[in-house]
Image: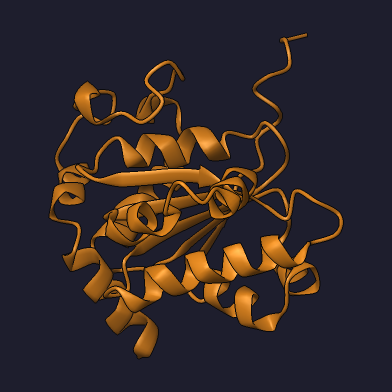
Length: 193
């Protein structure tokens, strides 16, 4: 099966994530953290998603991961927590990626290409996808795929079946060819009643 072969290849490129199998998930190397001021802990991630992370790392499930659910359900928190276990990770949103593409002083593809895990967040946050958003999302997918099927995580409020209507079937196929996971939590940003 092509997807399982790709899952194994991607998982073999993540030896440091194998620590997810043995480590206390509440502890990790703080020196690796992206956005250090953003509070998070793997212990606050939905336990079934942690199990999915472990299955992905072991090659039991295929990469990439398409993580979706309602606003505030903990998708970004979970993706950043996963990045904390990796020596070289990269996190960006569609908006930031588009700005970086337009900025002639930087090459955003270097980080996308070289990271062991790359996260693209806010998939489909706009009602109408611009040409720039389309080409940026496609290139992100292509960069991850062209360089040894590197691990990618796509984060969205949009249901998987709606991705192709936002972009097209080519991008949807690239984002959804692995594992999809829905977080059904209520918004964690809302005060408790």
